Amino acid sequence: MAAPKRPYIPDYTIKDAKIRWRNFAGREEKYNRKGDRNFTIFLNEHDSNRLTEMGLNVKTLPVREGYEDEPPQDILKVKVNFKGRPPRLVLVTSRGRTQLGEDEAMMLDTAEMAKVDLILSPYWWEVDGKEGIAVSLKAIYMTIVEDELEVAYGDLPEATGSLRGREYTQEYEGED
Image (cartoon, rainbow, N blue to C red; front, side, top):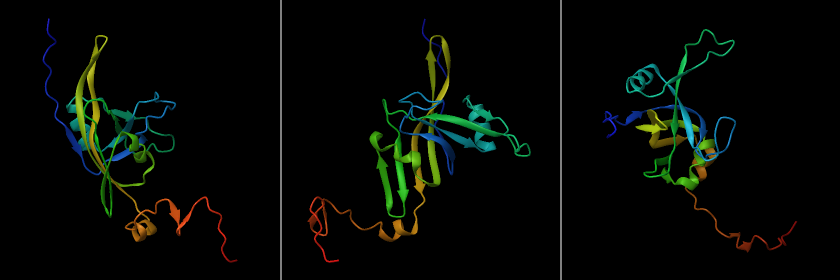
């Protein structure tokens, strides 16, 4: 018997997303198996409602002690999967944009974010008789914070192999 046809779930774009708990490198951590790449989006009310209506597994963080006056925070865990069709990972600076590959994805774990726009790609899954909807990253554009020196010197080409015409291994015999 063929599996029942499931409804199509469209991609979903979030502009100015607030993301936390980034693990684009796939590091093994307390709540993460080695090789699993993911991050969590802190959702506003509109996005939380829309994604819940779409059937995604939106969760609500428990209220922290001492912050009982704050509204509940809805979150969504997003997978970053390079099997099949890899996500588009783009770092944006004042000098332009740089597309990152799987081996450079870890740069997104520590980059200081100014703005994040992303596209989510929900999909149906089924394992051992269980099924549901998961979400993976289709594209992310992360504008990073640049300090005044990065802005001032960012257009200079990288030096390669030598320092002032001398090899790095050569002893400096300058004047004191």
